[in-house]
Length: 66
Image 1 (cartoon, rainbow, N blue to C red):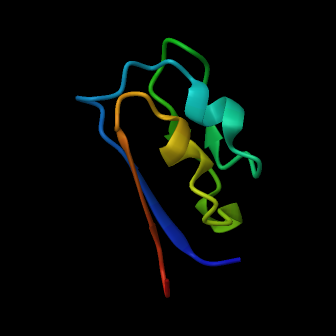
Image 2: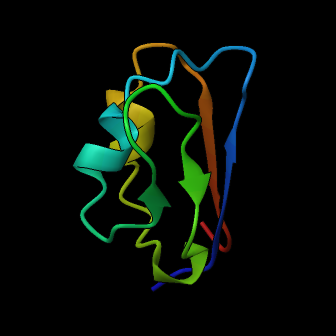
């Protein structure tokens, strides 16, 4: 799995929780109503599910070596 960097912009995030729900590797944690946290970035497969599902464009994912 590729090392990745995941950033959540708190100014854009509406705290809906979709990124947490759709991450197949459970990299993000949290519940609707709170800002998601990046808990296990080493598990990130670079699939961009969190980025693709974010309705607020609040997530930036950079996969190293891509």
